[in-house]
Every structure is written in structure tokens, then in C-alpha cells.
Length: 52
Image (tube, rainbow, N blue to C red; front, side, top):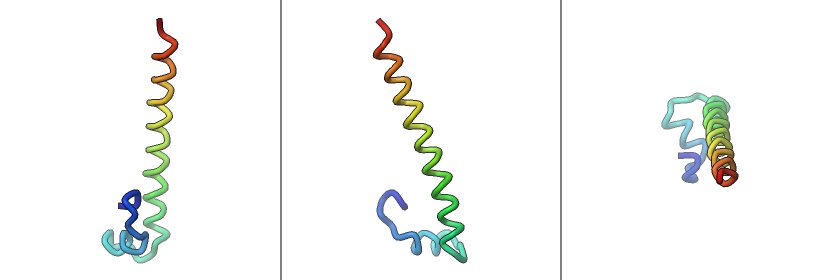
């Protein structure tokens, strides 16, 4: 939802969080996981380009 542009307050309400701080913690984990996944794919792509 966050990546689709839904306001953090709306997401917190839907998730039943009393504060946006808790929601931001979950989003932070999600963004970290996504960053790691993108880096892994990029590294694989670079390795494949080096393979004859």
C-alpha cells in the first residue's frame, strides 16, 4: 500500500496500529527486504554478463 501511495496514517488505521511509528517499522523491514532482493538480482545480472 505504501508503495502505491497510500498515506501512512491510512495504512496504520487499516492495520489497527495505534501510531504510525509501528507501521513505519513494518515498512522499514519491507523496504530493507526489497533493497536486498534488488541487490541480489542486480548482482546476478552482473555475474551473468561476465559469463562467456
